[in-house]
Length: 195
Image 1 (tube, rainbow, N blue to C red):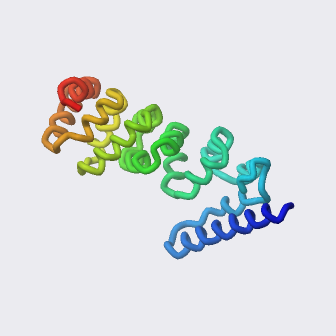
Image 2 (cartoon, rainbow, N blue to C red):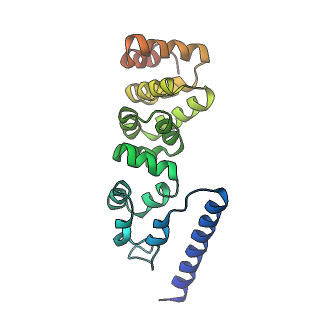
Image 3 (cartoon, helix red, strand yellow):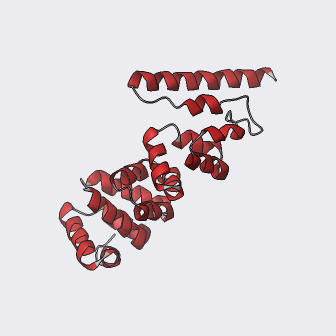
């Protein structure tokens, strides 16, 4: 092994040791599979060995097979995300990989297959508008679910409109979603409310 490879390996081990120490100090569960997965650099020189993925949960193992080691790094390092993936499956995993924090918040508050599917199929721009809307308004879990479904139905234009609404107008849209349905609320947001 070349000197540069050894230095890279030592640097990776130091980072993982620091992360594990930080998790121990914070009182979080330390993931043993980080230690099980870390091996000599693989063919991709990523530091994770795919052959050892059998030590992970089935949901995480499927992610490693489909998306590679980056999925393990971004999802397995967060206990709440691992739990969401194990509970809601592949749609939640894809949503978390695509939208990260807003997907985690939405799936934690609304652990629903419909929400995870909507987030998975949502484009990144809509996800960013959804995050802005969520930050601007204090949404209950039901309201957040309806907003996610409206954005999924109406696309980026609906997401952009929702992110600019006042609390009073958002309340009217959410009332429309409850009374007339998600499609009617999405149509209302896209056609009536200017972007």
